[in-house]
Image (cartoon, chains in turn green, yellow):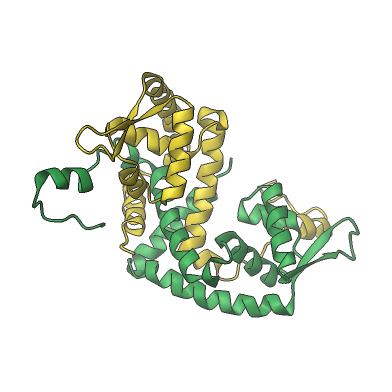
Length: 161
Length: 161
């Protein structure tokens, strides 16, 4: 349905594939980032863990694995999410048996997160599927364009509020 | 808390602002698009309609206003969202009194969407706030970079599945 058909019947063409007036949307950074995010999200759910995990969960496992003992606050800050979302995310990962909350030896009020051996296994599977998912989008760009896109996106998310 | 402080006490610095190992995340298109989307989303909620409307609702009002009689299917396709999400979105906009569902004269099974006069008013307010929101991010780039970023993002979301 995405490709425009040759106009056999003008009336039918008008109702099924008319060209929409997008007004200001195509010029907005916000609109374009959101559309790109939706496209990536859809393919992620199709390719990674059979839709069982969401992109934020993947990032969380990656960060906990690479930084054993990381706190929920550090994790939330790095992922740019709020405390409530973070607690929900940690609960889901703990319920799945992939991460553990452990009280810090240095600061008893602080809980550090670590990946379980089951979590390590999941990480390896997810990473393989993640690379498969990424490849479909990476191939749209040459190496310079890809680096450029990532650098420009980083400027967006590194912006101080 | 975002700026790194000068390291007065190494131990404190290590626990509050340690540099995380991000593993493969910084190289992933998906991760960078998602982080940019989160940054934009947070500022949108703060700047536009006092958090009362979400980015997808804004895009929907813009498209219905620019394309009177547009169907929910056309709208969903343009926004890259599924049918269930679209129905929820249309319901919210109709409940707010901003859009109307009207049966098409040419095809009685088809409902066309139009913006109400209240919706027109809201559109003008939202557009002003939207531009204020966008400006904060647009100013991170020069004109060439902005065009480049939008062109690269469009390639991501125009990808045929």
